[in-house]
Image (cartoon, rainbow, N blue to C red; front, side):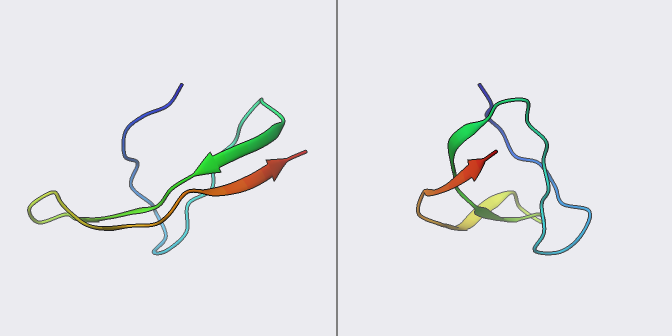
Length: 50
């Protein structure tokens, strides 16, 4: 299981690798790096990893 926040080397883009196929749900968070405040979140959405 995962949990936590990862910074992105490229604005608005985050690529990850997984060894697990199937349907995964993800969410996006916008974090203000000056004060570590969560400024917004997305709804859950699903991606299919083949």
